[in-house]
Length: 408
Image 1 (cartoon, rainbow, N blue to C red):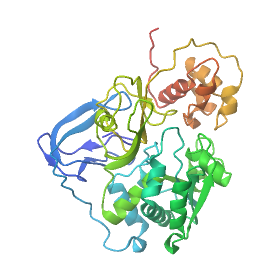
Image 2: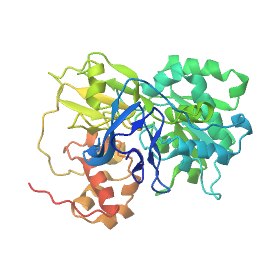
Image 3: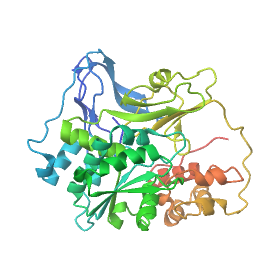
Image 4: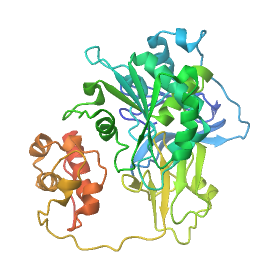
């Protein structure tokens, strides 16, 4: 039930109830929340706490698949989407439980409802996979270009934006070529394709805005402050499926790759599928695997429980067959490498020291909340300081949580 930014959804069915594919099983509990739908047809076995990819226990619904594949759809529009009011389209998107599928999992109906004093002039569709091993977005652009582009036009209508840009990476010429050919169709004439060089972490929305428009999102601000909105290609496709087919978000495309995977794939998998089932489907070598990361190799979270499940925001699962040998952490030598590599232009070494000494207000004042946790600073640190850990811990404390006591 916790697959999005904000509060967890409230479970609806009880043990023993039968559910169908697309049936709503989790209702929103507040304005910053998204509904959850069943991805399989079957019987509810339990409702309670289950392993979550974050490492915590979270409220979830255990459903046993009966193999029938019985499906239900949402009430759709009674007219073409071009004739619908923005409010009608936003309501369908909210009912479908669509969230950002590039990793943030922010409810899309909120992103498409900016404040009246922040009009959106530019809609950016993010087609950049961004991290090593991940190719799900590129694969979607190759196989479902019409759906992605139509979803972009629906979002454009809702926002009333003047310009729509689809950003892709230059090396992926096949995907870019497929999209380019589709853009020759007159109905997609309002969408502009821009090819960018591969550069990490250019797939992050703040960096993407700067690369495309030469605008910087202000400290503590959002893309709306620059007159922009950024949607992942998977999100655009989900919008199309909800508005045009009445299909809520209950499955997603995710990359399964890494040195310990014998048969790497991009899978369209039901949300809620256990990691073990997905990895077995890709012929993982359990004898050699040393670490499994949910998400990208740079920003993902290592997993300890294979009964955790695929989330709406899961772009990839990466399995490694070796670990980097542990090294002693040295004191910061003030080399400045982390400052040079930080795409937000923060000073990670100073922020880490503030958090370590529990000087949270100073960390907040120095911009810790703007950190995108890309991992670049920790990667280049010669002292091997886990800087991302301190960024996450600082944000955790700023959110109102108590300091964590560590035992050495």
